[in-house]
Length: 341
Ligand SMILES: [Zn+2]
Ligand SMILES: [Zn+2]
Image 1 (cartoon, rainbow, N blue to C red):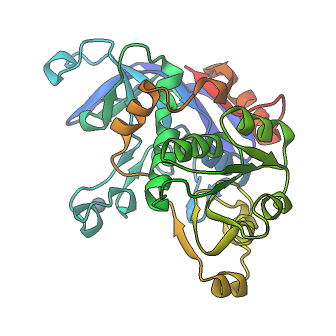
Image 2: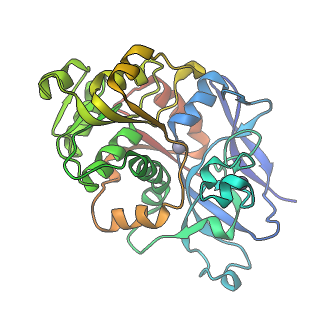
């Protein structure tokens, strides 16, 4: 059996490239040559805290769930793919038979096999095997980085689905990292009126301005000012701060809606009960996504979202550790790093 290169996370801030066995496709899985893998905020929780809640890293594992690959399997053609077809790979393999899957919520499946969440290896490796139905071929003109970005774009689309935005409602996005910048653009495409972004890092706030925010600031006070004390109709929270939900509650209007997309450090939220009660707020927790790839692809084709300005850095697989350190320390104006195995 042959080996391939993979970036393995051994523990906190300890990522090393080494040889691992090649994946052997089973059942309806096809062999893929990985081309681009994004470093996600959720990957950073594993890198910095060695886990998210009960999902803890117990042995060296490969991260990576935002990825593009070429179908190189010998059975590609009989499965309907021209050899070398570039595909986005949905990282979420749900069981399809549980109550929640049957009810149309595969993102909530408790038996889900999620690529790059323990104990399942992710895609920061030369090859990967995935079931045929999770492969989404992309139209001509999409490069591997664009294709890898369809996963976080899907996260943003699902969050907007949950927000049930009405035309010209005002929206604030808290946190202008890659997910915040995608939320902003999808909110605009979904008919948002005044669109604001808050991020304490000036370069991220500027990126939000460049990608369509009407106004940006480093802290919440600005929202009170911009809305004359009323607050916005909808807040989309995409920070990694435990205080994020509290800030969302402060920024939203009486009776407004909040969608929480970010994952807080330390697995706890700080949220005062009085403010959510008195304002009669609706909170929704966004969990991964449903069947959103076709819309994600269309949004890019129609020019409704820009992905390239979000991909600021790229690294070969051997330097994946550098990419993670850069992301963790918010150095060099980083938004999204792509790993190219
Ligand atoms: Zn992600
Ligand atoms: Zn299920």
